[in-house]
Image (cartoon, rainbow, N blue to C red; front, top):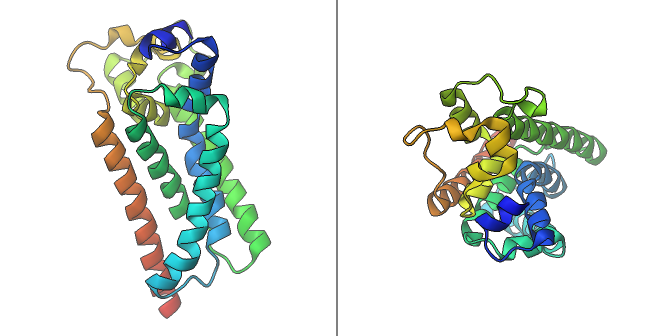
Length: 225
């Protein structure tokens, strides 16, 4: 937490702890999107864009606003306010949320759809946690995982938490959870390029929006057949 306070000046101990919670949102955002998508979509999705925008689009916006309000009222919200790259971090979370929406199940049976959504959400959280802990050997391989610097760099790039925190403008590789566990001091200059906030945020949001659009188009074609 001390390191977090150094990386983001102005954070006290409580805010630093909140920032640690905020970092976990990268793994939970796609899962939340899957559940929200299951509530917004159904097995007979609209065939016309206006109807989709009026119904499903509004439902997704309401779900996203509700989740954002819940986070804002938590310690993670206070830490988010102190981040230097708040806009890029928000774009990353929105992109991951929309990616989850695109992966939500579509079925006329509401109960079955929700069960499938919860299963996919749990799987996405598990995948996110595994990706976040891979560079550090999931806390099992001590003191430093036997990965080469090149493999460590690649695993860090796959981590949703790394994407979020570096997009937020933090030197995430100096965080104790990464620096000590993954041995990021072995990563020399040029081995890895950090995620640039505006670029990473825009790219993640674009991927999320494109995924939802592709899902709607595919579903429309299936219904038309």
